[in-house]
Amino acid sequence: MLPKSRGTLSADVFTALQSGSTAHLGTEPESEEDAQIALWTLYELHYRGFDEVDPELEWDPDLLRVRRSLERTFEADLRRQWEESPLHADPDLDLTGLVERHDGPSLARFVRRKADREQVLEILKHRSIYHLKEADPTSWVVPRLETRVKAALMEIQFDEYGNGDPNRLHHHLFRRGMEAAGLRTDHACYIDEVPVEILAMNNAVTMFGLHRRLRGAALGHFAAFESTSSIPSRMLAQGLRRLDFPEQMAAYYDEHVEADAVHEQVAVRDVCGAYLEEEPNDRDLVLFGAFTGMELEAHYARLMLAQWGES
Amino acid sequence: MSDFDRPTVVMCPAGPMLLRGDHEVQDADGTVHRTKRPVSAVCMCGSSATKPWCDGTHKLLAARSRESDKKPG
Ligand code: FES
Image (tube, rainbow over all chains, first blue to last red; front, side, top):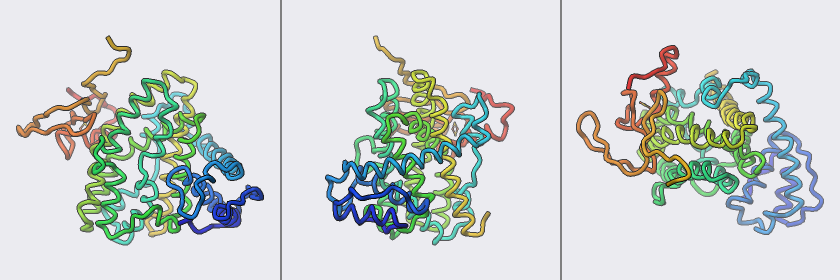
């Protein structure tokens, strides 16, 4: 099902997606929410599509025109945030240093110690937008890489996809966890409940994945994501057990403690390190991607903690 | 002859030891653990809660004692 619109542009886009008449579409969103939900939906045509939308529309030039306009604004905004960060000014900064020094509140710590059941359910619904297609946005990048980097990235992706065993595919593990916790798992079913921060996180990783020009940012984002996963995943698993969530849900996070301790090393050294040896001019782009991932995560954590009176 | 280095054992600075491929790792208590992914990370800092595997705790140790970043073998 298509999401609910969040403004005039997304309303027009969703009507056009159902009717197939797209030539008249404008490109000016009414708000950030309007822009992000429209962009998320246009991107979704490249993932799983929607029952009520003709699959032909995936490559409709007018929809691509709208998408491109939204992406330009979004990318410019993300770049501005990176360029305004004090970290950007450090010429010696590397990926590990960026991950160590980037500052943001920890939602995982809150879940471990204090969150109640309703709050955790809310987070799981929000996270499901990404976790139910975990690793997929990074797979867009694979054909755009040279031999060494491609092999290293695939070494991790293969693990994300269960090493050939569908039972161990990460987004399947999340689905099983959600079901056990009494949540729905149909395609993006919680999209209307997620804040704009979640839409932006999802859209950034897809945008980096879909543009060959931005492959360095995709790899940086990926490495930062893997590098900031093990310890928070352990906290989340502890919080879920504290609240007596079903074992499958906690097990999903257990898997990430161990898997991402490996992925982090491979992503930083063998993926981004090797990529930068080949493309030294992309240093800033890799850092931009990494920063963006962590920064959008921090926006989301701040929003949720403030909403719960925790900031 | 190969075109690219692809070591099967990799020591990560101040971090775990990566093992590529299938191995049986005996932990300090004598229990044998089979690797179950293409690359596994064996804890070298001694502080992991999921030994013999690394769980990222070494980074917390590093953050706590940033000045003495070097880990003894
Ligand atoms: S080396 Fe990573 S937890 Fe010990």
